Amino acid sequence: MSNIGSYEERLPGFDWAIAKETLGWQDGELLNIGHMATDRICAQGKAEKTALIWEGFGDAKKTYTFDDMRVITNGYARFLQEVGVQPGDRVCIFMDKSPSLYQSFLGTLKMGAVAQPLFSAFGDDSLEVRLASAGTRAIVTTQKHVKKVRKIQERLPELKHVIVVEGNPAKLREGELFFDVEAAPRVENFESYKTDENSPSVLHYTSGTTGQPKGAQHAHGSVWGQALTSSWVLDLQDDDVYWCTADPGWVTGTSYGIIGPWVLGVTQCVLDVGFTSARWYKFLQDNKVTIWYSAPTAIRSLMRDGTDLVKQYDLKHLRNLCSVGEPLNAEAVVWSEEAFGRPFLDTFWQTETGAMMITNYPGMKVKPGSMGKPFPGIEAAVLDLKTHVPHTEPGKVGLIAFRPGWPAMFRTYRGQEDVYRSKFFGADENEKPEELRKNTNLWYVSGDRASIDADGYYWFVGRDDDVINTGGHLVGPFEIESALIEHEAIAEAAVVGKPDKVNMEVVKAFVTLNPGFDFDDMMELSVMNFIRKSLSPLAMPQEIEVMEKLPKTRSGKILRRYLKALEWGEDVGDLSTLEDD
Ligand code: 6R9
Image (cartoon, rainbow, N blue to C red):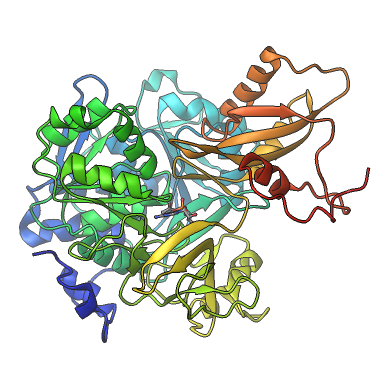
C-alpha cells in the first residue's frame, strides 16, 4: 500500500498539519532542518541505520549511519561557530557531490546560518555574481575548487572565511582555513540553533529572463511540504533505499536529495561520477535502490542506450520512479514501463515553490505526457494569458499559477522585494513579502504555460519567458549575453534556446563582431571555452551564429523571441516593432 493511499480521498479537508503527523511531530520540538535530519532520527532509535551510501570514482565507497551524520554535522556546526559565522549569515557550499557537501550543508543549518549551495561546475563569474548578491560570509569548498574562489575573493569584501574541507592543507594560501571533520575531535553534543518556521534556511540562485540570477530564500518551515511530498509522491517508506540523481547545487538536490528523505529517516545513495547508462544501472543494482528520482534528460539518455542494456542488470528492487525538471515526453514514460516495469511519475515544481506542486501519484492513473494533478492543499489554476482569470474550460492554454501560502514557498528574492512582488498577480505595491505570502486573493505565477484536461490533469506547454532549460537546468540568457560581450571579439549578443533531442534545449548565441575580428573555427572555440570557464558547461553555447546586425525593437531591445522563433521554425509573429533599416 502506498503512503498516499487514494489521491481523491486525501483532498477533502486537507490540512498541512498532516505533515507533522507523518513525522510524529510534537508541538514544542525544535524546528531546525539540520537537527531534524540527524539528531531527531537518532532519537527515534535509528542511530545505527544507514543514512548515506556514497560512491565515487573507481571503487570509492563510503557509508554513514544517522549517528555518524549527527556527529559530523555537529563538527561542522561547531567549527563554523568558532570561526565566527553568525546565525543568518550565508555560508556557500561549493564542491562536488562528496559526503562533505551533505554534511556541511546540514551543519550550516544546525548552527542557524543559511546554506547557499552552488553547482561545483560554476566558473568564477557565475560564482562571483551569486556570492556578491548573497553577501556570503563563508564558503566551504575543496582544494579542487578553491582556485575559482581565489580569483574573485578580492572583489568580495563580505566573504570573510574560505574553508577547505578536502585536499592537501599544505597547498592552502594564507588566510584559508583547513578543516578535516573526521580528524577533528568528535563533537558528541551540539545544541542546534533555535530556528522556527520563518527562519531562513536555504538560498538557491535561479535564472530569470532579465538581470542576473535571483536568490530564492527559503525558510525552515519548508520542511512540512518537503516531508509530505516525499512521503506521498516519492512514497518513501522506512526500509527504502532512495536515489535522487540531482546535484544539491539545484533545488531538487536539496529539497529531495537532502531534506525530505532524511527528515523521514530514509537511507539515501549518492553517485558522484559522470553519467553513463551502465554505471547508473550498476549503482541501482548494487545498492538495491527502491525509489529513484531523476530527470527527463537522463531518462532519454538511458533510452538511447536501449532496453537490452537494462535487462543485463537486476533492478527488481525498484518500486517507484519519479522525474522532474523539464517536460517528460510520453515516449519516455512508455519506455520506462517497458524497461523497468513501471512508469516514471512526472512532477512539476520550481526553485521558488520549494516542493512539488503538480504531480502524478502512486496508484493514480498516469496519462503519459501529463504532469498530473495539484498536490492536496495546493490551489492551482491556469490563468488566461491576457485577463489573468482562471480558465474554466478544459484544454485552454494559460499561465500556471498557485494561491500563495504553501509551507515550502520561497520567502523572497534576496534583496529584490520588487521582483518577488512582480511574481504575484494582483499585488499591491506596498505589500511586504510576508504579506504577499499569506494573501490568498493573489496568484503566484510560475512563468510556465499549461492546459488542464477534462479530468483535471495538467499538460505542460512551455515557458512563458526566455529562460533556457537545458537538460533540466535553467540558464538565463542575460547572464550569458553579459559574459559573451566580455570577449574581445564580440560586440553584441543574443542568446536563445535551440531544440535538442536529448537535452530539450541547448544554448545558441547570435553575435555581432567588433571591427577587425574574423569568426573562424578557432574563434568559435575560443568563445565557447570562454563561457564554459567563466560561467559553466551548461551555459556554453553549442552554436554561435554571426550576424551583421541583431534584430531589435525601436527602443533598442534585442528581440530574442524573434530569434527563438526562427530556431524553432515557428511563426515569427508581428515584426512591426522591429527596428527600421
Ligand atoms: C525543480 C526544478 C523550474 C522550471 C519550471 C519549468 C521546468 C520543472 C517540470 C518542468 C515541465 C516538469 N520544469 N519541472 N517543465 N515539466 N515536470 O526543476 O526547479 O530549476 O527552478 O526549474 O523547470 O519551466 O518553471 P527549477
